Image (cartoon, rainbow, N blue to C red):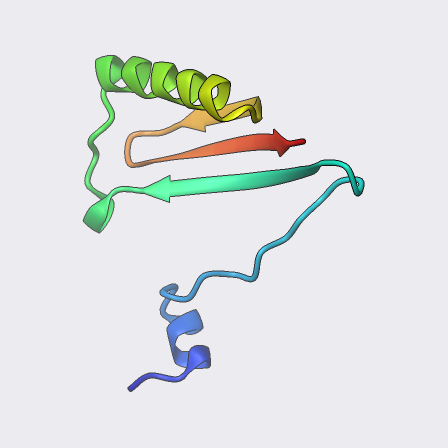
Length: 81
């Protein structure tokens, strides 16, 4: 079994969660990547993902502050109240 340090050096260990914001709300940086770094997001898929992000935010009540979609991953900055 690998140690935490070995996993971290291999890029397989997630960083600890960092929370920014006041007591009544928090802002989270969310990242999701594809398996094996495959390029899955073309122009059409990026539009579908943008729509899903907006719909998910509206449904869950979080505020989608900003997002970035690349070919194999995306980032989203959300505020939870």
